[in-house]
Amino acid sequence: MPQPQPPQAPRKRPPSRTVGTRVHGQPAFVLHSYPYKETSLIVELLTRDFGRVALIAKGAKRPHSQLRGVLQTFQPLSAGWTGKNELRTLTDADWVGGMLPLEKTALLCGFYLNELLVKLLARDDAHPKLFDHYVATLNQLAHQESPPIVLRKFETALLKETGVAADLTRCTSTRAKVLAEVQYVVEPERGPRPVQPDDTAPRVAGKTLLDMEREDYRDAATQAQSKQLMRFLLAYHLNGAPLNTRQILIDLMQL
Image 1 (cartoon, rainbow, N blue to C red):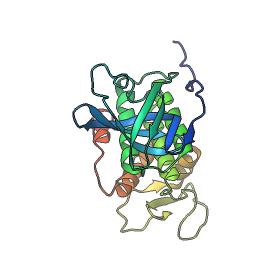
Image 2 (image 1 turned 45 degrees about the vertical axis):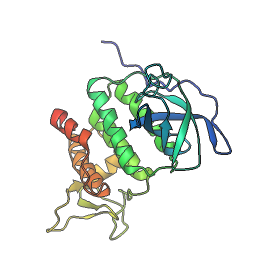
Image 3 (image 1 turned 180 degrees about the horizontal axis):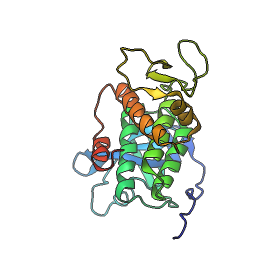
Image 4 (image 1 turned 90 degrees about the horizontal axis):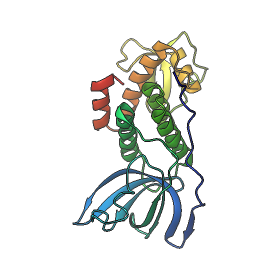
């Protein structure tokens, strides 16, 4: 059986630049789009240097618009826009290439990533490391790496990069190092502490927390406990708002 190829980075782009209120050549991905008036779209982009931005793509719904075929999810773009307000105007978008398409379960996982980013990322808050992690995650999914493990790594990176993830290696009550053999619960605002009899939050072994910090998901118990833990933490930070794509994935693969 042929071995899967290592992830491929998108080919090099010209550096992005800002001139007044105009941005040129910004690495970007479409997260979501929806109709605006009769012929246009509102497009949510994840960009490397500007974070999540909302843009009006004028005329993008017209049959012969150049933007119509370019503004597709999971395809690396070089984008430009103008404007000072929260809703700016897309001026250009070019397909960059260099990444395999997502298919089947990987495609659903990609939509789950996008929904997480739309709901958890504030607009105009740059996270270049998270952007790079997103690119790597799409590549891993396209190369058929284990979806549950890929998603756990991205979920953890997302909470860390947005500043809401606590240190999983330190006990909040003592600041002592988490011990592999001890059972913990993770308080969303503070971090891990030893289990108490009346706790209702998911219980996780210290080993699971240490494995997550190392991105080591080889242990089946780590995979199972980290899934429950991340579901609990994400629900808290989403204020209970449902994730439509996660429910589809749960129904299909128990991710």
